[in-house]
Amino acid sequence: MKNDIWFYFRNAASAAEEDDDLTGSTYYPLSAFRGMCSGTAAVTGAVTDDADAFSMFFTPKAVVAGGGENQALTNNVDVVVVAITTDNNQKAVMDAIMDKIVASPHGNTGVITIFDNNKGGTDVKLHADIEGITVLHNANA
Image 1 (cartoon, helix red, strand yellow):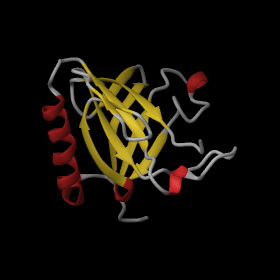
Image 2 (tube, helix red, strand yellow; image 1 turned 90 degrees about the vertical axis):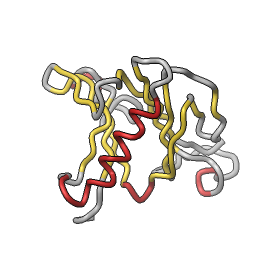
Image 3 (cartoon, helix red, strand yellow; image 1 turned 90 degrees about the horizontal axis):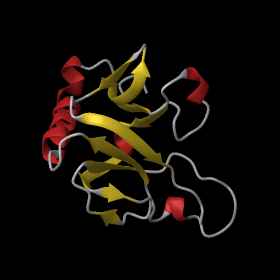
Image 4 (cartoon, one colour; image 1 turned 45 degrees about the horizontal axis):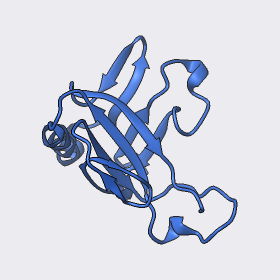
Protein backbone atom coordinates (compact mmCIF):
# COMPACT_ATOMS: atom_id res chain seq x y z
CA MET A 1 0.00 0.00 0.00
CA LYS A 2 2.93 2.35 0.50
CA ASN A 3 3.32 2.99 -3.23
CA ASP A 4 -0.34 2.65 -4.19
CA ILE A 5 -2.23 5.47 -5.82
CA TRP A 6 -5.78 6.02 -4.54
CA PHE A 7 -8.83 7.82 -5.91
CA TYR A 8 -10.77 9.83 -3.31
CA PHE A 9 -14.46 10.82 -3.53
CA ARG A 10 -16.71 12.58 -1.02
CA ASN A 11 -20.18 13.93 -1.68
CA ALA A 12 -21.06 14.95 1.90
CA ALA A 13 -21.35 18.70 2.33
CA SER A 14 -20.98 18.56 6.12
CA ALA A 15 -19.57 16.34 8.87
CA ALA A 16 -23.14 15.34 9.77
CA GLU A 17 -23.53 13.77 6.30
CA GLU A 18 -20.22 11.89 6.51
CA ASP A 19 -21.96 8.83 7.93
CA ASP A 20 -22.71 6.47 5.07
CA ASP A 21 -21.07 4.78 2.11
CA LEU A 22 -22.87 6.88 -0.51
CA THR A 23 -22.09 10.43 0.65
CA GLY A 24 -19.17 9.85 3.02
CA SER A 25 -15.50 9.53 2.17
CA THR A 26 -14.59 6.64 -0.07
CA TYR A 27 -11.30 5.53 -1.58
CA TYR A 28 -10.54 3.15 -4.44
CA PRO A 29 -7.04 1.96 -5.29
CA LEU A 30 -5.84 2.62 -8.82
CA SER A 31 -5.50 -1.16 -9.17
CA ALA A 32 -9.32 -1.44 -8.89
CA PHE A 33 -9.93 1.10 -11.68
CA ARG A 34 -11.46 -0.61 -14.71
CA GLY A 35 -12.10 2.38 -16.97
CA MET A 36 -14.50 5.23 -17.65
CA CYS A 37 -16.92 6.36 -20.33
CA SER A 38 -19.34 9.15 -21.16
CA GLY A 39 -22.83 8.72 -19.76
CA THR A 40 -24.43 7.54 -16.55
CA ALA A 41 -23.79 3.90 -15.68
CA ALA A 42 -25.37 1.38 -13.33
CA VAL A 43 -23.50 -1.27 -11.33
CA THR A 44 -24.55 -3.78 -13.98
CA GLY A 45 -22.54 -1.82 -16.55
CA ALA A 46 -25.56 -0.51 -18.46
CA VAL A 47 -24.82 3.05 -19.64
CA THR A 48 -27.45 5.72 -20.32
CA ASP A 49 -26.71 8.71 -22.58
CA ASP A 50 -25.96 11.79 -20.50
CA ALA A 51 -24.40 14.96 -21.93
CA ASP A 52 -23.23 16.26 -18.55
CA ALA A 53 -21.83 13.17 -16.83
CA PHE A 54 -19.35 10.34 -17.16
CA SER A 55 -18.86 7.12 -15.22
CA MET A 56 -15.79 5.60 -13.59
CA PHE A 57 -15.83 1.83 -13.06
CA PHE A 58 -14.11 -0.05 -10.23
CA THR A 59 -13.78 -3.61 -9.03
CA PRO A 60 -16.23 -3.84 -6.11
CA LYS A 61 -14.66 -3.23 -2.71
CA ALA A 62 -17.44 -4.81 -0.66
CA VAL A 63 -20.46 -7.00 -1.04
CA VAL A 64 -23.62 -6.31 0.91
CA ALA A 65 -25.03 -9.51 2.41
CA GLY A 66 -28.57 -10.45 1.65
CA GLY A 67 -29.44 -12.99 -0.95
CA GLY A 68 -29.02 -13.80 -4.57
CA GLU A 69 -26.02 -14.86 -6.58
CA ASN A 70 -22.79 -13.10 -5.66
CA GLN A 71 -22.66 -10.80 -8.68
CA ALA A 72 -19.91 -8.70 -7.11
CA LEU A 73 -17.41 -11.43 -7.86
CA THR A 74 -18.54 -11.97 -11.43
CA ASN A 75 -19.99 -9.20 -13.57
CA ASN A 76 -21.06 -6.13 -11.63
CA VAL A 77 -18.88 -3.14 -10.78
CA ASP A 78 -18.87 -0.20 -8.40
CA VAL A 79 -19.51 3.03 -10.27
CA VAL A 80 -18.84 6.68 -9.52
CA VAL A 81 -20.90 8.93 -11.77
CA VAL A 82 -19.21 12.31 -12.13
CA ALA A 83 -21.47 15.24 -12.99
CA ILE A 84 -19.96 18.07 -15.03
CA THR A 85 -21.16 21.60 -15.71
CA THR A 86 -20.51 21.76 -19.47
CA ASP A 87 -22.47 19.49 -21.79
CA ASN A 88 -20.33 17.12 -23.88
CA ASN A 89 -17.09 18.06 -22.11
CA GLN A 90 -16.51 14.57 -20.69
CA LYS A 91 -13.33 13.96 -22.70
CA ALA A 92 -11.55 17.02 -21.30
CA VAL A 93 -12.31 15.99 -17.71
CA MET A 94 -11.46 12.32 -18.32
CA ASP A 95 -8.18 13.45 -19.94
CA ALA A 96 -7.36 15.45 -16.79
CA ILE A 97 -7.90 12.32 -14.69
CA MET A 98 -5.72 10.25 -17.01
CA ASP A 99 -3.01 12.93 -16.94
CA LYS A 100 -3.03 12.78 -13.13
CA ILE A 101 -2.79 8.96 -13.19
CA VAL A 102 0.14 9.02 -15.60
CA ALA A 103 1.92 11.74 -13.59
CA SER A 104 1.19 10.11 -10.22
CA PRO A 105 4.56 8.40 -9.66
CA HIS A 106 6.33 11.71 -10.27
CA GLY A 107 4.27 14.30 -8.48
CA ASN A 108 1.32 12.87 -6.64
CA THR A 109 1.05 12.31 -2.91
CA GLY A 110 -0.65 8.97 -3.47
CA VAL A 111 -4.21 10.33 -3.43
CA ILE A 112 -6.03 11.70 -6.46
CA THR A 113 -9.04 13.68 -5.21
CA ILE A 114 -11.70 13.61 -7.90
CA PHE A 115 -14.32 15.50 -5.84
CA ASP A 116 -14.61 16.50 -2.18
CA ASN A 117 -17.80 18.45 -1.55
CA ASN A 118 -17.27 21.47 0.69
CA LYS A 119 -13.94 20.52 2.29
CA GLY A 120 -13.20 23.42 4.60
CA GLY A 121 -16.02 25.47 3.03
CA THR A 122 -15.02 25.03 -0.62
CA ASP A 123 -15.27 22.18 -3.09
CA VAL A 124 -12.03 20.39 -3.94
CA LYS A 125 -12.12 18.94 -7.42
CA LEU A 126 -9.63 17.63 -9.93
CA HIS A 127 -11.09 19.70 -12.79
CA ALA A 128 -13.06 22.96 -12.69
CA ASP A 129 -15.91 21.38 -14.69
CA ILE A 130 -16.73 18.75 -12.01
CA GLU A 131 -19.83 19.69 -10.04
CA GLY A 132 -20.69 16.53 -8.11
CA ILE A 133 -20.58 12.76 -7.85
CA THR A 134 -22.88 9.83 -7.20
CA VAL A 135 -21.35 6.66 -5.75
CA LEU A 136 -23.03 3.37 -6.66
CA HIS A 137 -21.74 0.47 -4.57
CA ASN A 138 -22.32 -3.05 -5.75
CA ALA A 139 -24.52 -5.41 -3.74
CA ASN A 140 -25.80 -8.93 -4.06
CA ALA A 141 -28.99 -8.97 -6.08
